[in-house]
Amino acid sequence: MARDPDYGAFMEKFVLQPEFSPHKLPLKDLTFAVKDIFDVEGYVTGFGNPDWARTHSPATSTAPAVLAMLQGGATSIGKTVMDEMAYSINGENKHYGTPMNPYAPDRVPGGSSSGSAVAVCAKLVDFSLGTDTGGSVRVPASYCGIFGFRPSYGAVSTTGVIPLAQSFDTVGWFARDPTILSRVGRVLLQLPDMHLVKPSQFIIPEDCFQLSSIPSDRITQVLVKSVEKLFGGHLVKHAMLGDYVKDKVPSLKHFISEENKDQEYMIPSLAALSIAMRSLERYEFKNNHGEWVTTVKPDLGPGISERVWEAVRTTVEKIDVCQSMKTELRDALTDLLGVLSLSLSLSLSLLFPGLPPKLQTDVTELESFRARAFSLLSIAGVSGFCQVSVPLGLYDNLPVAVSLLAKHGSDGFLLNLVETLHNTIKKEIETAEKISC
Image (cartoon, rainbow, N blue to C red; front, side, top):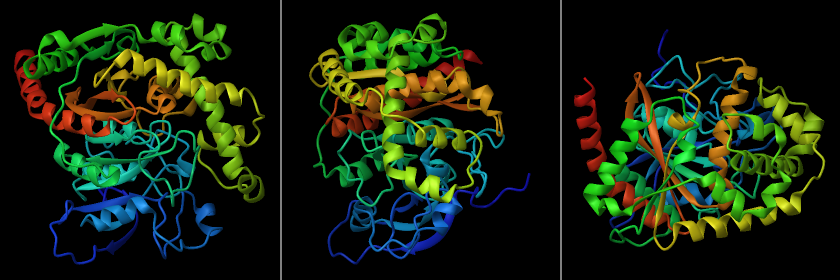
C-alpha cells in the first residue's frame, strides 16, 4: 500500500500565520490544522461532502476558535478531512478518502474528526481542532493513540462552526503531548495558569468495564497505581454507574426499552441515555439541514446516508423530556462526583466490544459496536461534563486509551491532572509491559 506523505489527512493546504507580537505568546512556534467544519475566511467550509461544498460560498469570516489559535501565536497549515456532515464516528469518507491511521493502516482512524486526529498522530502538526457532538474527538483520539479533549458544553464558542446538534456540539482539540494539550486548552478556554488541585476522589464505574471484550485488568492496575503514587489509594472509589443513573435520572424511564433490558451487552439506563441523546440530535439535525438534504439529495456514504435520511424524516418525539434529562443527569453526576472529584473510566478503544474496526467493515456488523460505544459516549454528551481521552500504550499492537470525566466547568482541573499523571502512567505502563513479557 502506497503511503500518502500526509496520510490522507488534509482536504486543503494553506498557511495562516499569526500577526507579529512583541509579547511571549502561549502557542508560539506551534502548527495546527482545523477540521473542515470550521469557517476560515475565503475558503469554502466543505462539511465533508462535495455536494455541500458545491452549494455553499466561501466563508466571509473565520471561526473564533481558529482566530484564538492564531492570536495565541500558532500557525495553521490547512483543513482536514472529516466524516460527511459529522454524522459518523468511523472516520471513513467515500469522496475524499479515509485518513490513514498511522498505528494501524488497515483500521479506521475514528471520526468524525478523522483528519485532525491523524495529522497529530502522524506528526504533521503539533495540535489540531475538531468538534465533538457524540464522540467525534474522543473516538479518533483513542483510535490514534493521542490525547483528545472534549470541553465542558458551552465553554468554547461554536460560532463559525457548522452545527450538527446544538444541544451537544463542542469544539475539541488533539495533541500528542499533554503539555501542548493544556496550552491549547488555556487559550481556547481563556484560563489562567493554575496549580494542580488534588482531586477528592477517583470513581471507577465497574459496570462500564464490562462492556469491553478487551482484558482490562492491566489497564485498571496502571491507573490505580498511578493515582495511588500521586494522591493516595484512599481516593479510589468504585460505583455501578448504570444503577446510579437509573435511580437519579427519572426522565430516562421514557427511553428504557424491553429490548435493551434483554441484551446482555447493554447497561439499560446508559442505553436509554444514548437513545434519548440521539433522538434530540436527529431533531436538531433536521432543523439545521433537513431543507438542504431534501432539496439537494446529496451523495452520502454507507451508514451516513441512512442516518441522515432517518433524521430528516424524524417526527418530534419527547424533545422536552430530552431537555429535562440533560439537567437531571448533570445534577446527578455533580452530586456523585462531589467537590473537585473525578470520574475515571476506560475510553473508547477499550470500552468498545473490540478494537477499532477494520476498514470497510459492513455497516450492519457495526450496530452492536456502535450501541455500546454511544451508551458510554452519551454520558459526557448529555451531562455537558468535560472529558479527555488519554493514550495508554498498545494492546495487540493497537492503541488503547482511558477517558477521564470531570464536572462541568472543571476543564482547567482536568487538563492539569492529565499533565500531572502522564509521566507516572508512562512508568506504570513500562513496568506492566516488562512483567507481561
